[in-house]
Image 1 (cartoon, rainbow, N blue to C red):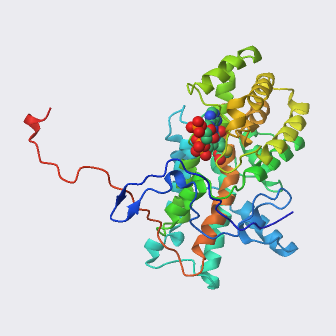
Image 2 (cartoon, rainbow, N blue to C red):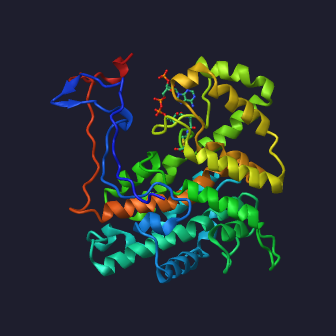
Length: 402
Ligand code: CMC
């Protein structure tokens, strides 16, 4: 597989470019359609290779792999003091709100990662001590991501938290912490464990999407990585991004059955509805991840049985792919139909974006690490705006305002 792709920024026609200027400033690229903000060597997803390649840029030696795996699993335990933090959320809190907050909360435990508390810029390229501190935060965040997610899941059910087990894979440990009912010999179903592993690999990174950009924007102020990753998680929560896998299922439930698909498609064309799970800023053809999602779905459905929404999803897919509106706009399915697999596996609907966030922590960290160690140091990300407000407004006393 091609491990690295240099990022290029293809020139996309941006109808929304504006000609107004303010002291030489001009709105040229609303929504960053054409702007490359950083040089990057971070790989697109390589389904065979996983997290180490993404973060460190090469496949690990056997010894490096051993250390990485042990460190990540070792750091999966969350301090017992965190339990009341999780219990402070409402019973119906969205798990993404809990996980986003928990990532920021985690930073309060590790002042060694906070440059402002250390009074210096941490993480200097070539400085072994600073790289070791950086690695530790990376192990912690990857290791604890599954634990925080499982805690967010269990707290809403009023269940006790589960200490991460030893001797299981990353996804095996995650499923164990989610599901475990008390039996010592509990083991997750190996087919479902493998399927989740495949979906985690698919979701680990995807170039400079909204959440990775948010991590870099936030990290560019040199804040600690927990805060930067929490900011990325907040960005992922939205329905145009990671929240789309939840939105897809809500949309399919609202459509109900295949016979209702044509009316739904017409509503989308009239812009009354959005076809969640379709369209992508970069792909103008089918998202290659969607093919692996389909294959994984077949494997999972053999164990769980088919999801009742599958027929509606297939009818929707078929109708959209032959409709001129979608063909003309090059709209095709993205990765977010994987919600059907999560549903079949028994995850609650509002937990789906968390299943995107957990593996994406790895990608966010890869981008964050690359920026922290780039030649010439970090430059704060500070775009400008085109001010179009009044140049002068007189003060009107409150009693005279209309
Ligand atoms: N349903 C209906 N029309 C759409 C859709 C859609 N899902 N996506 C784009 N369009 C239309 C859009 O209205 C525009 O039409 P026109 O040129 O007539 O105004 C045209 O297609 C081009 O779209 P755009 O708005 O310029 O595309 P964008 O790059 O700004 O937005 C997107 C990308 C992913 C936010 C958008 O396609 C969308 O809202 N999709 C649904 C939400 C979704 O599935 N998000 C997950 C994305 S993939 C995983 C991830 O990154 O999280």
